[in-house]
Image 1 (tube, rainbow, N blue to C red):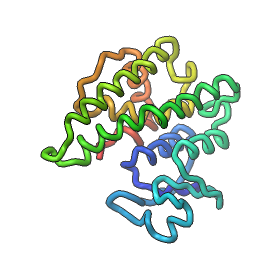
Image 2 (cartoon, one colour):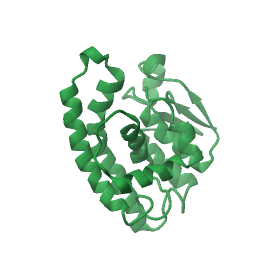
Image 3 (cartoon, rainbow, N blue to C red):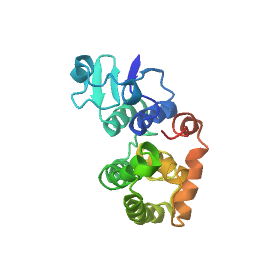
Image 4 (cartoon, rainbow, N blue to C red):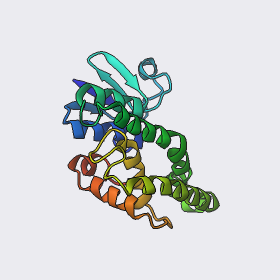
Length: 206
C-alpha cells in the first residue's frame, strides 16, 4: 500500500493527500516533521536526504518533492483526469505547477510564517504587507487566466490545480487585504465544493 510520510497540516503534504483523495487511492500516513520531528533521523534521511516532508513509498518506490509526487501519482492512476493525456493540456498543468513553485509559494512563505508561526509581538508586518501586495499582483495573472476556463488547464480539475489550490486556501483563509479577483474566487469556490479538498485542505491553518 502507498505510504505517505508527513504531517497532515503541512501544505506540501496536503498536495499529496488531496491528490490521493481525488484519485480515491488507499494509503497509510505517518506523522513526520513539525512538532512530530523524526525527519532528521538516519532512517528518514535515507529516504529523503533533504529531511523535508512529504516522502512517499509506493511498493518500494520512493519519491519526494510534493509536485513530483503529484505528477507521479496522477500519471500512474489518473491518466485522462488529473494527468491530461493531451500534451498541450498537460503542458498547461505543468506550467502552472512550475509557476506555483517559482513565483507564488515564495511570496506566500513570509506571509504564512509571520501570521501563523510567529508570535504577534515579533511579526514583521512590513514584510507581510509587501509580500501580500506582490502576491496579489501575481495572482492577477491567474485570475485573468481563469476568466475563460473553470480550472487552470481547462474545464476539469487537473494536477495543475493542486498546488495552487493549497495556496488559495491560505490566501482566502488568512486576514489579508486582498484585491478583488473574481475569477480566482470563483475557482476557489469550485475547489471548496470538492469533498477531497474539504477533507485534506480545508483544515485549521497551523
